[in-house]
Length: 397
Ligand SMILES: Cc1cc2nc3c(=O)[nH]c(=O)nc-3n(C[C@H](O)[C@H](O)[C@H](O)COP(=O)(O)OP(=O)(O)OC[C@H]3O[C@@H](n4cnc5c(N)ncnc54)[C@H](O)[C@@H]3O)c2cc1C
Image (cartoon, rainbow, N blue to C red):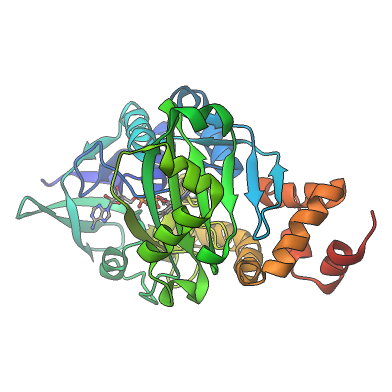
């Protein structure tokens, strides 16, 4: 294989597909490579929160995704003490095997060349304008050339290291999930349910209703918590103790084994760009701390990289200009990630989390601040300030 693409994208998940689609629509000749044979599954909670809705609209794909997903009526937080609050927000659930197939098909429709079964081996800078990327395809090394390379390989450290973007190998979070069909509960549960409970202290559990009465149920640990826990054992405790989870499992049909995967969160541990090679999606830690949601931000960072290339590729110093524009775009997201990362303390402070949910039920003001956090429409910093917590704990409004 000796083709020269404008852009080679490695990894055909949400980040890679978003970038490929956006670039191809702007007239670039794009090669999209993945080690897997599609349709392939990706261990995930399958929830589409507001940022994913926003990104899918921008990509012109929201209507097609709506057809295959189960729309939720918002997000319900269930607190340590059993109290609940409903957050109004665009939300839905669709199995990743279906979502990623749709994203890939809609990307190939734009003229992108897709090569599956190609595992990224290494990238070599041949000169100021060209990279050679080598892949292992069924035990044979094949190479392709391009002016730009986007790495979109997800949380696994090895390819990020091989591309020269890795600063720290460790992933900060870990989560497990399972599929369970329950026709009876599907009539009652219409929201994405997030559960805070002692069995998942340091993280949270979820119960997300998907199409065909199939629920995605799982738990995730964030920050240092995953190092001190055994997710499989905690999951067993979670489904044995939490009433809704117990109910789901009791009357349900288990459709899959429990599967786990690491999450690379907080936009930390990697460089975002190295010359004409940019990292997008979870490989640069674009998954949110606190929530572990990353589909929306994978799509968004893919589009940011596409925009940086589209606007700057004709510049005399185009590599530097693209890297700078892209890094600026990512840095603009940083403050939000910082708040989310710091707010992970809530997982370990049941008293405060209970108070927050109780307050949100009493006060429209607090509820809309919480909604602003999930909808990304307001500054989430109120969760980190003394005055913010004084209002949550003591205000009568
Ligand atoms: C248990 C769990 C639950 C989660 N729940 C949610 C949720 O409910 N909602 C949400 O928004 N996010 C969730 N996330 C996070 C979400 O899965 C990621 O943020 C998202 O998949 C990142 O997309 P991506 O395109 O960057 O990477 P990925 O989706 O991981 O795609 C990477 C692609 O690269 C390919 N690849 C990997 N290595 C190579 C290689 N060497 N060569 C070639 N190709 C390669 C892979 O085959 C894959 O297709 C969850 C994560 C976990 C682990």
